[in-house]
Image (cartoon, rainbow, N blue to C red; front, side, top):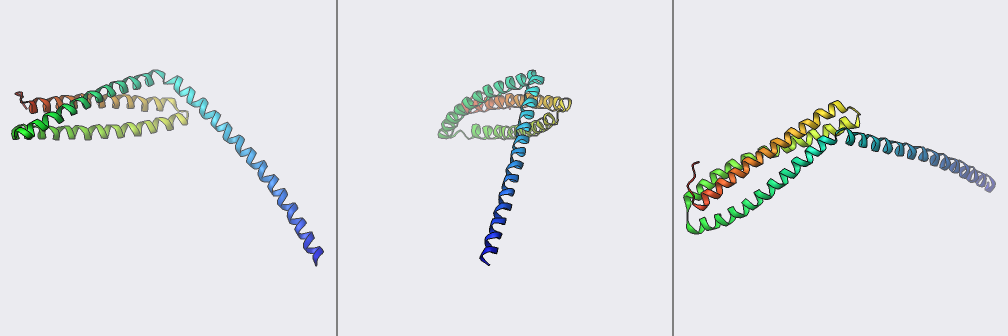
Length: 178
């Protein structure tokens, strides 16, 4: 009985060892496939960068413009905060009411900007999918859509800056036609 159990254990060890070697061989093949896929993706990524270089420069330029506008908007918000405190202390209800009405318009512009950013996000996703599928014509369309949407966002930020200027004029007591 002891001999049978010992032989069964030896047989199980041999089968287990063979299975482990086979599993390592499969893992090596899978690893090679992953490395090949990574290399192909890097090649495709470089090809896309080379193909759409001008468009990427345009997107970066629009981003720089947008960031400059954001800085100006932030400065205007600081000014508005100071003017709002002064108007509140002076009890200038008309100016506060007029500023509130303009701020409603600003909120509408902000909602439009948010919707445009969501569209940009979906277009960028579609662009990446098309590049991954090696379809550069369709990717070009998506990239052009991204550029036009970013230009619209910059235009909306210009409108927002003008509205903030209106709020500043109203709160500072300058005569403004609404």
